[in-house]
Image (cartoon, rainbow, N blue to C red; front, side, top):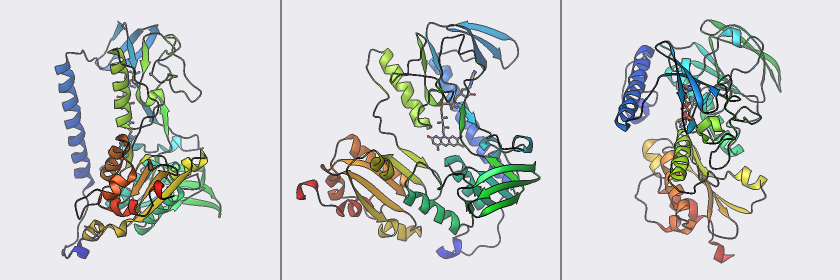
Length: 402
Ligand SMILES: Cc1cc2nc3c(=O)[nH]c(=O)nc-3n(C[C@H](O)[C@H](O)[C@H](O)COP(=O)(O)OP(=O)(O)OC[C@H]3O[C@@H](n4cnc5c(N)ncnc54)[C@H](O)[C@@H]3O)c2cc1C
C-alpha cells in the first residue's frame, strides 16, 4: 500500500486493523498445530501434554496440563526442550513487563512507539513489521552493527533499509535503566557514543537472545551435563553424558533454526537405524525475513578471513539484476566467496528480494560440488532473481586462469 502510487494504483486512505492481523496469525498457527497433532496421532505415538522433570535416570515426572502427575520411564530419552527469550538484567526492565516475541505477535493494537532491544534476527523482523503497520520504532543494539554475525557491508545494507523506512537505529548503545510500563509509557536510558539519552516509548520489546529451557528439570538427577551457557552438552552424534539420552535442537546448542532442529532429528534417527551421521560440517542456510530478506549459506567474508582462509570475493548490486527493475525493489546485493585456489564456492550472501530462494540455488550447487563456473554458465530463466548469479560469477576468472 505504501508503494501503490509508484505502480500506478490510486488508493484512498487505508488503516491497519491489528485485531484482524492477530486473528490471521492465530488461524495460521492453529492450522499448523492441528496439522502436527494429526500427524502425531497417525504415527501411533502417545502424546502427553504436560511439563516433564527428571526424578531419576531415564525417569520423568510429568505435571499434566489437565491436572495430576504421571511418572514415565523410558529405555531411550530424547531431550528437545528448546529455549525461551532472555530478559536481560537491565535495572527496571523486568518490572516494566517487556514484550517478548510471543506478546509482540499477540498484540491487537498498534504501539505508538516501539523500542526494540536487540538488533538480531528477532528484533529486526519485528521492528520492520511494526514500522510497516504504522508504529514509530527505535532499535537499540549494544554491538557496533546490526546482525552481529554478518559482514559489515550486510549490516550497513540493513541499516540503510531501516533508514529508508524511518526506523531509528542506535548502535554501540548500552541500555542502562528502564522506567515505566510497556503497554503504557516507558523510558529507556541509554549510553551511546554520543552521550546519554532517554528514549520515551509506549512499548519495549526484549529481543536480546535466548536462554535454554534446561533449568529446574532435574537434569542432574538424570546424569545429563550442561555446558557453561546452560545448553545440554552433546557430542557430534547428539549423545549426552547420560547413556541412552540424546539432546537435539536449540537446547543442545545447535544453530537456532527450525531446519537445524529437524536435521538434528534426522542425525539421531539415522544413527539409531545403524547409520553413522554427525552434526559436523553441515551446510546450514538461513533467511532473515525482513523485506527484502537477507539470506546466507556457507562462510561469511569476515569469518573466512578471520580463519585465515584464502578467498576471492564477487559482489553484485541487486540493481544489476533486471528482475528488480520489474518489481521496483533494487536495494541490496549478492556476494559470493570462492576458494582462492580452486573454483569451489565457500559462501553466498544475498540481501534482496527472494534471497532465501536464490540461496537454495547456490546451496544446491555447493552440495553437488559444482564449481562456480557451473552457475556462471548455466542458462537461467530471464527475468528471475537467480539469473543474477550469471553476472555475479562472471566477475571472476576461473582458477585455471591464474
Ligand atoms: C521470533 C522468532 C522467529 C523465528 N523465525 C525463524 C525462522 O524464520 N526460521 C527458522 O528456521 N527458525 C526461526 N526461529 C527459530 C526456531 O523457532 C527455533 O530454532 C526452533 O523452534 C527450535 O526448535 P526446537 O525443537 O529446538 O525447540 P522448540 O521449537 O522451542 O520446542 C521445544 C518445545 O519443548 C517444550 N518444553 C520445554 N521444556 C519442557 C518440559 N520441561 N517439558 C515438556 N515440554 C517442554 C516447549 O514448550 C516447546 O514446545 C525463530 C525463533 C523466534 C523466537
